[in-house]
Amino acid sequence: MLSKTVLCVEGLSKAILVKRVNRFTVMVDDGISVFPVHNTNTGRLEEFLVTGREVLIKPIKGVKLTHRLVSVKDVEGLYAIVDTITQNEAFIKLVDEGLIPYFKDCFVLKRNPKIDDVVFDYLFKCGKDEAVIETKSAVLRGFNNEAMYPDCSTARGRKHVSKLIELSDKGCKAYVVFIAALPKPKCFKPYREADPQLEKLLKVALDSGVNVKALSIYMDPQGWVILDDADLPLCSEWLSSKS
Image (cartoon, rainbow, N blue to C red):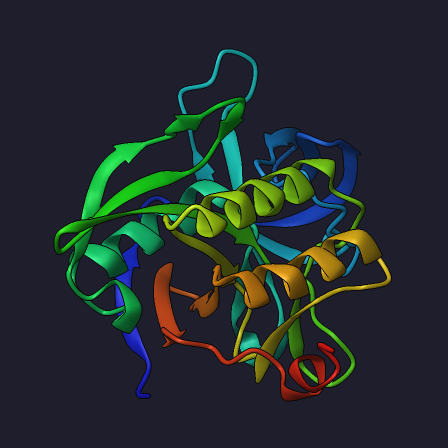
């Protein structure tokens, strides 16, 4: 499909990454001073949070932090979107505009629905049906240009997928959507080396009728979020190894 602009993140400025302080904070240098910035993505992000890498940051009205990390410069002068807030804003904009084929007739019925002891991202209304949606940030690139998730072991991710399997077995519509927020990946697959249990669960999920989907977006230097592929395929080599 042709790339399409989705939304523009305003107020961005460039900086250089100095170091990651902890899960939620990185230090950056904007050429005037070195200061801490909020990071919403709790993955390891070892491929992107590298000293000296150019980043785009956005002002926020925080109590302690004044900016949020939005994206990191990647290939071809384009940016990987590490900010999960921006990822989900783009996702909902795509749903609202009918640009995701499998959510063509859907809208957000509820955010953060709690089912038993599990909180998901969204409950959608799709025609006459309701669907439980969980999104995951896939900002990891494989050796063959695959987008991958996770980049570290994730008990939370396993809990979500396990519950989606249970819901699907009961006849509910269930989706896990991997947001491949890096420039132009060829496909998506789970990163077995980071969490082999999750990879096995995703195989079970497919067999149980859970809709395992992916889409790819990235950011240009002007701060536009670009839709690259609204229905990024699952990597064929992973699918062929499912059994």
